[in-house]
Image 1: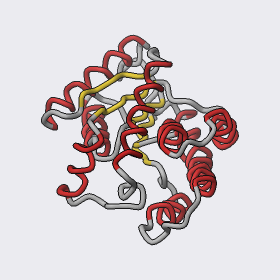
Image 2: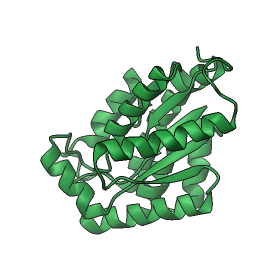
Image 3: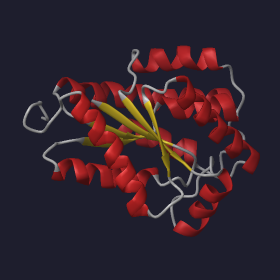
Length: 216
């Protein structure tokens, strides 16, 4: 099962996906945790380019191709082998980030982005995507005071982040069977409980109990 966490910058994805991994391990699963961009040696080198605040002249088309290159490496090197081995894969961001940031945020053609993404992933899509939702201004404020990495995407205008959030909401509305909306504005513990409730419900629906499925 392939589970992704998405959301605006500062929504708490990295914190929550770590807590989700801990909850899965405690429940008897053996999940693989990874992230985008990065997750591999090659992907991390691409991440450094994408997040470098000095790269202000990067054009949106170069941006999407770099993200896609990192994604292609991650899928081939880590995600598909882990899924083939029967493991649950958790990913901090995936292709929906491209649709939200480069599609709705940058205004690139969504159909073109889907074609590029399908090529990079060989058609792989998450089984479950959790959207951790917070207002754009709240998320950016958290980033500034939380001590997390402040990168090139964070420094975009507030309006860009608002468009990105609206993009996420549109994506979730279009595929309600895959997405679960999580209000990420509350305390970490409350958000973690909501995340676990959503994930455990889907695992139960699919009959993926720790004793009844292959977890690697």
